[in-house]
Image (cartoon, rainbow, N blue to C red):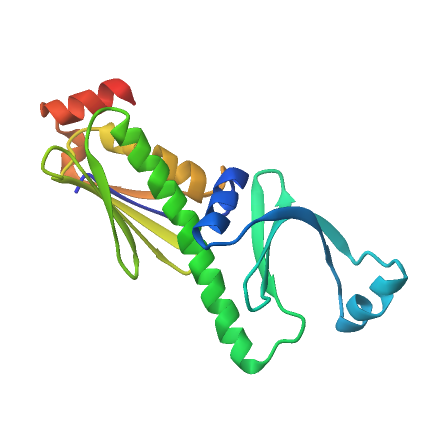
Length: 210
């Protein structure tokens, strides 16, 4: 392993958010979402023109069983996922938590797709394996190199395996740009492989193209 990096997960890219909706089989729209301080203000005052405490531009989608997903733009380059339903039961809360996890995983898979496209564009074969905890990108003539991406709650961990030299940081640039805010702290543990001069042809090709 050449390095292991941990950072706080964030929704930061609108195009990736739209693609995540598509991966869940939902057709996204854009709209204005209002945040209300109470159920009364939402149900009663909104009908007479009250717009709530805050309004956000949002990318919206609705599931077949009428759960609404809103990814609200809280500031430039920063989005927050909200899920609601007209009437929420105790059982619905578990469904909403599962939807949030599924959407997060769909969004992360978009970043994985972009990483694979970048490697493929260099003429190096790449593929992805999915697990309950995340994804692993395997690449190289015999798929001997790997980038393992796992997530627990709002923490992302990426580990680069089999790669020698500083090319490993270029391999994870897309992941970090799509999964973390520009102000996020990236905590990286460097391994001895990072300081090794790479001679493998595959890594030289990637280094020249990235």
